[in-house]
Length: 547
Image (tube, rainbow, N blue to C red; front, side):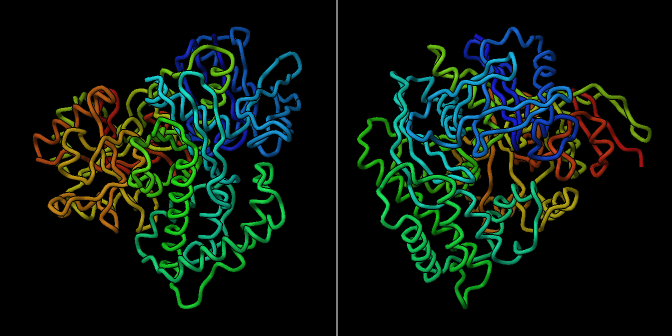
């Protein structure tokens, strides 16, 4: 069966599943240097992507559209307008069945639509190792305009049960509260605001958690919740976007505390929300009574590596897993997975993180020269030259993180390398640079250093390594680690192995290769036109800028 999932709103994307296997997942931002978080501007893009992979629209058994809080959308197909009616954001007016399909039609094209939260839950569970093993799992979904909800997916029956909300705070609260304090209190336009939460998460390393501020934040949240939902029954229906926004308005009005520095206030907000999240999960799991102690984390808040680590360290669960696409970059996959769960006997998705667009063929620009260069030679170049290299290889990663195929790689032994990479990326000084490390050596360098192939947990840099790899040490001596083994990415594994033999260091710096505000470079020419790094490596060829 062919299922085509489509996300038309921000982080627009198209994903195709054939008989339980992910054929491709293409986010609009990864086409032609499009703007980050780009929408699908014309529905013809869906058909073009199908054709690029050898499929026709009439081959598809189910087109599936992701739900949204605005359920009526005007779309375009080759300039002709039509209306789509989408599933709601989280639940129906009467029915809270997460996997309830909402059927519709675009002229003569029938489609299914599932709630936005159904897509998040389905993407996380179906892609997880728990689904492959036939196990059940809790799934925590916390997205921008919704409260954090905990679900349980039973492996054998595939039944999804809602365990309810964990706390009365929508995901957008993190960035909107952050905007009350310097340096994030300057106006910021959409869609750039979608990247603000990650900046705040990095900046809090400059602050200290103040206990009086945490108490004040907790009291402010409780008071706002009481005002908005006072006298109403404890009903799931009230945990909707509108009430979430009203609660946030009241929190914003009263959250500031005299005598607390902005950086400390930001750190305290982060800590208060983290503590509430862990407590909410612990309380729900204690009363839910489901047997499997697995957790999948999805929704935009699943990109917060410190919250993910707090959940992992809570000892509530045996295993915590986060997909590489927890935010809306995985929504087209997720809504297709929701259809897979309801329309087929398939539960586990067969997938690979490198299922994005292939590199486009390009010509070499004037002022650049090309020459053969294998991975051993590239490792030698990195070691001897101590300068960054744009590394473009194979198909792009799915999700927002550069995981080695659309990366800028650099030696980590010089502290100035972090400053250089932030300069060429035009990023703030406090932004971290991630390490990409051989999985077998990660526990020697990091704590815990456990396998982390998608860069979604926090790791401390061990004291004995801080001076050896300063470029990947964040301001609080943590690192957003990516581990690599031969099965996950053979070329990166080979490069790191050769580099380790030369340097004694089993890792490199890794940051995304892209124009500022755009998705990953779609071809070598784009990296040449960008021109901020002198060396580009792609498929066994080294490109060097002459001047």
